[in-house]
Length: 52
Image (cartoon, rainbow, N blue to C red; front, side):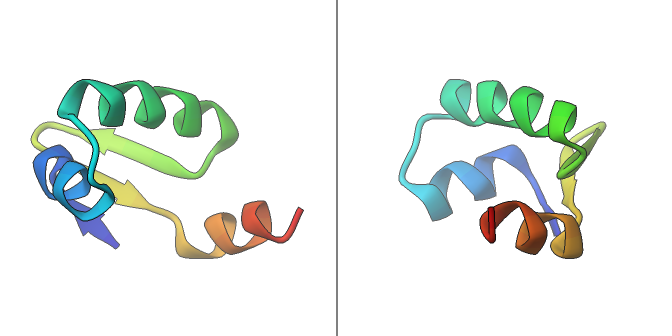
């Protein structure tokens, strides 16, 4: 799944700065990759993470 950080902020009801912090945290977990202008979410990794 691919989202801009603004789209994620709107979907999650957060400010963009908080989304940026979460993206950095989730990058360390291997859940997302950040690219110029958008974030790619690894759906399979996210599902495994949420099952913990």
